[in-house]
Image 1 (tube, rainbow, N blue to C red):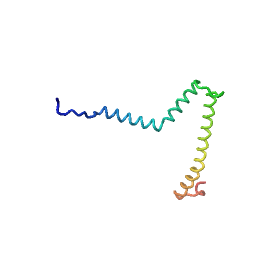
Image 2: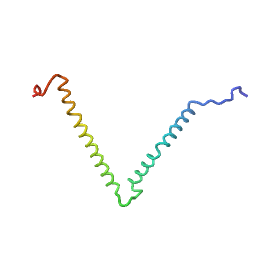
Image 3: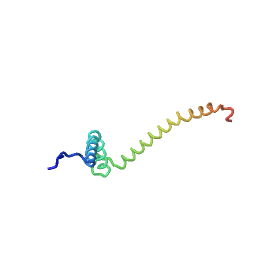
Image 4: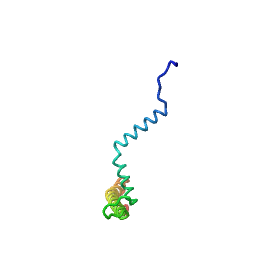
Length: 101
């Protein structure tokens, strides 16, 4: 009988344990997102029917609302960013509006 009978974990065992721990932590926090993605896949493949909603129509509305939100954000950024950079560039370089004309 060998003198050292204790087992030590190899690199593969440690890697598997780490992967299982990380997957378990993900499932604790991310189970809602997994269910939401499964539901959306089933809805858009017409497996689940919800009271007369056409998946194509829902997708078009989501894209339109998303575009409207992004367009609003771009306008807000332009309103805040453009006047600030113009005046700061003119003042910083020692120029003014008369010299710009």
